[in-house]
Image (cartoon, rainbow over all chains, first blue to last red; front, side):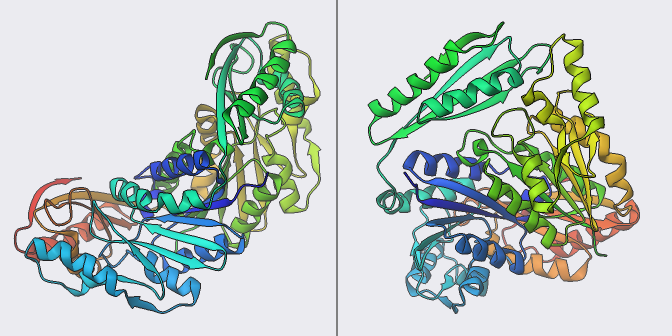
Length: 264
Length: 264
């Protein structure tokens, strides 16, 4: 079964100079995966218009069904995502009236006037739809471009999550209904290189993906965490595939290998 | 001053399904930035040959001076980075004799024979140089392609760091000698949108980059962490530029704004 593919674009110098770890990517990737998307790739770029536009054009050219971006959506000069997305799409960058009302409302309550930098947060590519931001000020941006859906979110994690949840029902509609089962098996006493042919055999015997994560020392004290994942229309079918794979792994365990536990 | 540009490629399904946060990227980005590189972009791809090759070709086509990759360097079927880098370069994927000795030595000590999956860890693009792996088994890979230097490392953080440190002197030779000074200023009581014009003014007045990181609520209880960074041939010159920028920010602080601390 071919899953709809998603790309995630992260914008911000702080992600590329090591000041901040991109936990937004982890969070989004997990949510999309569980929902039934295949996250095909992620691109991180600096706060440079040329690079931001390139990232969106690249994801579009890959035929992404869904493109999510985080970062570069605030009032300062280096918040450029909205403008550079407009350039990437060849659309005008305009004040969106609905977004302007959202932004005005936030500042009116605090008795603050609108300024050029505040109006900027209401500027979006033509024909975009603003997404309400319950937590912060800048609205998110939803754009439909051909078969692709683009969702632009701020980089502040609480705001990113709030905006993601606004569009979650829409993303869910566009994803297949799949149940995913993921099991970790901890194996000690056998090097990953000895387990490698067993993993290949398990993947041929069942409709699963098996990935090994070594955490000890390959030769001296090997510890492998095997992650076995299956997706199917029902949970029962997915569990069945995982069990089939585990049976193959246990039956062909190389000498010295012992299973220290299964985490379902 | 134009800095040499680096791209970082991260390979692994686990990074795109939300199982693992990419802390390797943070670590490498910080090391490279401090060394005098501009990390221009980062690409994360799945364990798919087509995608891995595409990532390397993309970084090469961007004229990267340095390309670092992590992940996909072990013995299992889905460790494909070496093979797919070969494809991207149009080079044969061959057993490197020096690498083979390194791998054989590791297993010989443990009394384990060489197998097809163990020999695989010694396969590299033609004319590559193996990088010793003090921590794990698979050697790193160093490739020179035109003006670009490519360094391929495993995804296990301890192994990645060990291999990075082997090539660090070489990377340092290729970077300019620059001192970087980074100062954080915590500002409360003023929304980011009010601070935005002040930041622009500071950046025009001094040779710095100022980035604001909002952490409170823009309207109700704004807290901004302003990161002011300067790079110069000497530390004194960099400090001078930062001080010039701070002076502008303090002199033009919008009403209500107060500095809660400087972190040098």
